Amino acid sequence: QVQFVESGGGLVQPGGSLRLSCAASGSLFRFYTMGWYRRTPGAQRDLVARITTGGTSNYADSVKGRFTISRDNAKKTVYLQMDSLKLEDTAVYYCNGVTSTLSPTFGSWGQGTQVTVSS
Image (cartoon, one colour):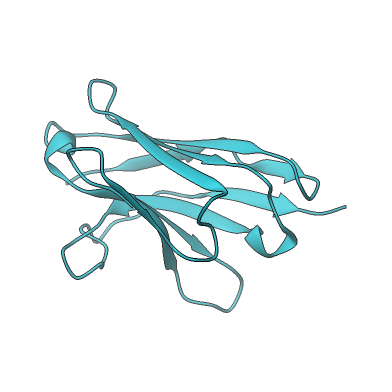
């Protein structure tokens, strides 16, 4: 079973930047499309960015042009560079695999990392 440890969240002003990291366990990381999800209180967890094994990335419209996902297979880590942050980006961010139907690959989740955008 793969486990994830997210980090890098924090409090930032609108327009600021943060870089999130997610370290995965297991030896099969490089075979999975990976993604970043986020959840706000009372809402479901939404996929905001994903990156294939070959490095092709896709983004939700709400973050396109502001967020950049990347991965380092040797370190079994996926990153999310978040620029031009907005108040509505406030959420707990998680990583997980992404299936062909854009669902989470694995049933277990890490603790997430809180991102708070506030002036």
